[in-house]
Image (tube, rainbow, N blue to C red; front, side, top):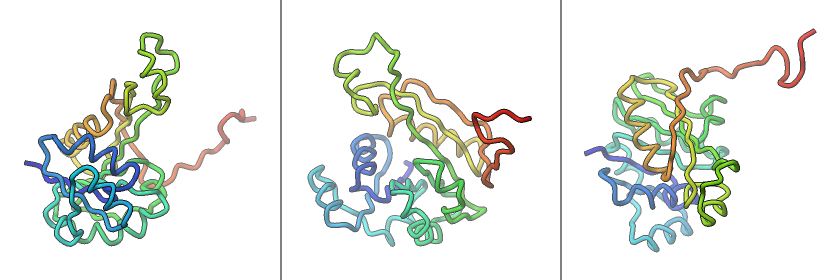
Length: 192
């Protein structure tokens, strides 16, 4: 059984992911230190696991954190992970900016939901009111492997599908740059 440590489990995104994965086939470890986050977990009848216990056991770690905290917290989390663990980020901004601590013996996966289509006229009224998706409206998700194997990608995609339910399609980004991409010509301007 795959063990997942959910970092920031009691925050906005952490709670959404906890709700989706708590009854799944994964062994979940909910890492949360803030009072409000711990209260959010207790409302769900979940208890936090201390970080120093959860991280060495984790096969997968999900960083459900605001981008401005990822650099500091990944510097604490990544050194404690076992060889071969998969680190999942919920947005490409921090990893592409070099804000996630890297280890060559770990795999790194990025996933992000897309907003539901405003052109989907077959949606129910409840789905149409779910403007950001993940509650009633089906949404596509994008996934990319920054470092790792095909098996790491498959593991990450399976988790991404479950934590972003109801997901309709997965869009795989074939290659994600490890260094920021500098555009020769700004988007929207033509080269002379």
